Image (cartoon, rainbow, N blue to C red; front, side):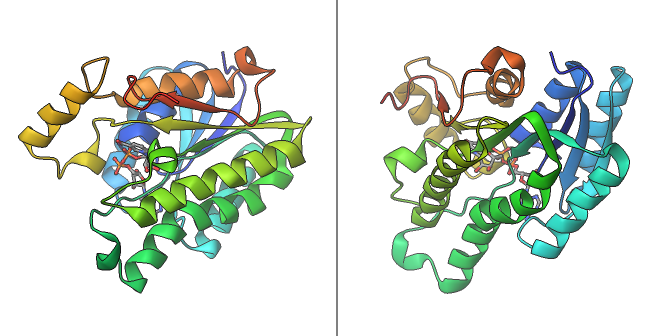
Amino acid sequence: MLSGKNALITGASRGIGRAIAIKFAENGAFVGINYNKSEDKARDVLKIIRDRGGDGILLKGDVSSSKDCKEVVERFIDERKSIDILVLNAGIYERGSFLEIDEERWDRVISTNLSSCYHVLRFAIPYIGNGGSIIFISSQLAFKGSKHGADYAASKAGMLGLMRSLALELAPRIRVNAVAPGTIDTDIISNYSQEMREKRISEIPLRRLGKPEDVANACLFLASDLSSYVTGEVINVNGGLYIH
Ligand code: NAD
């Protein structure tokens, strides 16, 4: 479905980003695997991709830094000349009430989750050709809000404002969409106790946590020509946890 396409994915060393990188490569894309600290995990992702007959490149860089974002895009362009698919996936979540969010944490969460999109997009858009697809990984909390992460919810809602604006501005050349995952079983929820996991599963109509592959499947649809008449849209991948 993505044969001959060049895909750049931020935060692709583990979790959802890893699943997207592997899924895209299995479907024929060359993938840029951005990571910040987890070099070994990023290498594992590239090895899995190569073992399955695909190919990609490792791109170290902290997406909260404008300089690193520029370097990540430039290294990908040196290798591939253009970008067809860009997935803005890197993100962090820190649990705590609003008054526990000090200025340092606010800046960390907003710069990693939201400003990173601004930086990567500014450098990448000039290299995205006709028929390109940009995908934001937002969250159900962009719609619901969060008692335990107001900064995170604000960053994820901000991503949707940026997504909708670019969908208008970049049409008809480039499509821009988002995926809003519910509770997906990755490191980001590793602080959940067994009790919290069971309670959450009981609240989900489809009675299981999401898998990274569930999100990757939605991204494959948005990246491919199957969604050629879809732009400015959000696909909710949440097992029915938040229907709206
Ligand atoms: P994760 O913690 O397993 O992965 C996050 C990824 O982002 C990692 O690869 C990490 O290295 C990368 N990252 C973090 N900070 C970075 C930085 N400064 N520079 C470069 N990379 C950085 O979590 P995940 O669940 O795979 O999360 C992926 C995305 O999905 C995030 O944006 C997250 O907010 C979103 N999301 C996750 C869930 C969930 O329940 N897991 C729900 C909704 C949205």
